[in-house]
Length: 419
Image (tube, rainbow, N blue to C red):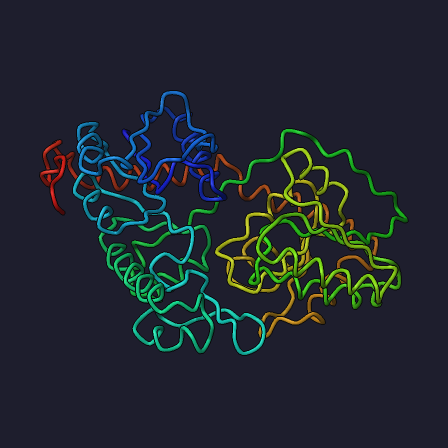
């Protein structure tokens, strides 16, 4: 097949771009011809998405019409769209070839994209269907920022995105949770499918050995530090975990983000009041340092208060035998199974007590802890890259075969043409 991979940027921004690179690698290894088409281009020395050597790139940053014409001339059998900023460009792309869309986030189903109410109380997941009522609730429930012009712009953009999704031949999601989200918004059962993310095992083997009488007490947070990630709730749970275990505890909070200073201040309060609780903030870690932090930790804590579409960090660290605790929210229960690779804490509502109970359950019994470590390794294997590549290839081929090839002039995609 000739597969055109579509994304909003060629810059390595985060998890979506890591996935794009992994998907391209899998498709290329199966012998498919690839083209990468992107809306915007990275500036300066910013990192670009790593793609196979034989994958050409087309940028629409200078002239969308010319870029669309180049795409049509390449004659793809199918478009694999991962994310787009401009829904109008999305409409024009659909004139080139049949398309599959991977919904990595709440694309078209939430004004802010967080699917979270931040008031009253701590952030809680929103289960509403996207629509005009969201405009009335946006400020009272603190769903996002406080600029009314930004609110209206985002509402317009998300409305256009949801309308556009109905024109794709297939919508892919990384979790059944996200599949239900799009079914809830009226997309058909046959159109929306789940294809879990690929989670490769690290090439570097873990040499960490736990002796039989080892008493685990080292917790690890990995990720972006913003309000919906639950850092303050984790910090509030630490003294409770220490009390339940009856021994000192340690927390490494690795990452960065807008709440880092606030979390560091709260951490200082915790350690002042509880001297046998240690907390460190090493910042963002490169791949080697990240593996080292995972291997030194005893338990991954994912205290997210928003409905994570999947929560890739869980199976990633599971390959290293690291059990996890998290609130039972979003796509997390699809990789975290009670008693197998960790413990789910109640999420209605999420509380420090619930998180502390889950952590103490994992760490209090040495035999149980050893079983959870082994379970983490086994469950991580469910997300093998080979399994993902086969499922993705099957979907793309079905969509490509269901519609005859289009000519380069189909839809009159020429430089400067209006949609």
